[in-house]
Length: 237
Image 1 (cartoon, rainbow, N blue to C red):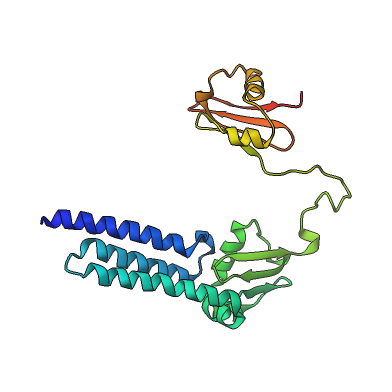
Image 2 (image 1 turned 180 degrees about the horizontal axis):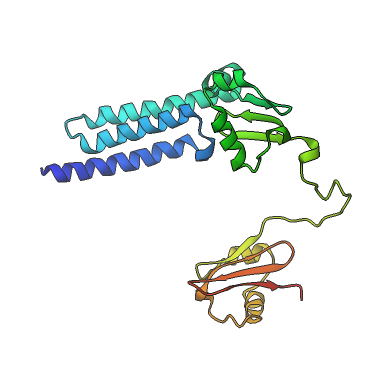
């Protein structure tokens, strides 16, 4: 059997085995991965690549190793949910680095973070004056959480006793030129109603629409494919 053919077959096995096992691990945003999760992911990917191209390695044994590396994080994840102590050991805890505008150098040294790195993280969140910060914490996933002092926080409608309207999630009605009939049905709308709204902007061809979504205020956003413009159509008029 050709070595290339063997590599192709093993690559297919590695790819779909990794796909199945990773799906079993569940969903988690990359930005929320801890350093431990990151290392585990690299290791699993390394095992999968070994299965793919190292033809002298036993396929079953390599798959068994990859399965173990998937199963152990799943087990730890289950234990972390049910045991606070294990969760702290595996995932770590948030570290306070600023308190009432004061930088806590001792905590910075504990997590091996320089003041320059801290200032850079603050700037990415729009904070240029450290004295504006009430609390800043480095989370276990490496993200910086900031609570500004009360006098530095932006005003909200509730602060001004101003009533607001409900603003929910928009509903996609057309995607890539295809009408989502189930979405229309969930809103008790018809294709004729949708076409009538589109006719307000002389949009006749559904296939030319990249996305059309209806928000809770009755505004229909329509984005045409290519370099064509987008439209916001009021359906309440």
